[in-house]
Image (cartoon, rainbow, N blue to C red):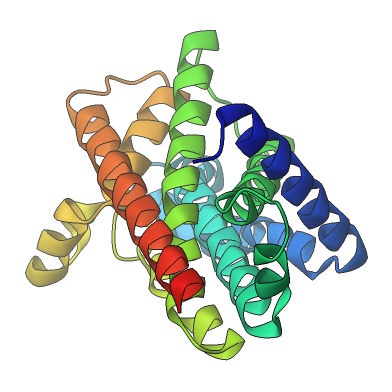
Length: 263
């Protein structure tokens, strides 16, 4: 078994490798811009009408809808980045580079850890970019330092959980094309929750799904923290879903990786 010090050292090397890939192939960084485009689209195209439905005037609708929709856009950005990590993991597995790594004195888990850490960095950049653009166009959060810490911390935790799940998606598929499609339903969860409209406004069947799917309590918790509103029990559901997705995704990914290493 590798020592923790060696695992950390090898993981940092793999992390540096992924950063170099991001610099040479900026398509991964382009994924960061997709949530910003969606934010501007929803606020300036649908914001007036949707904001009026939230109880504001047509003039103030965009500002109201901006505050409402921004957490959903953040979750969509996390899901978009997760799709990218599934692709890069699949590329490593199908192009033979991992087979070469196995012949070297490298910690077995370091390869996957490098993908996870680089995606976390990309996600952090995406979160900062979306929030920054949101504030430029009128988002005025009421959160104090503790509220910001809770909101950003929860976003990073769900990002870590979804990243490990997506690593498993990249490992379980036999082609890059399949790996790019498998995590795609994650991008739909904010739409099928409370990310873009209140869950209670949905039809009965969709409302039930929206209330009990993983992203809804996370979106509600982040929204409440940023707007300094009562969080209630939503944060416990959010943390529980993060734990289930993260632990399950990590165990699944390591099992797949070890099985393919034996094979």
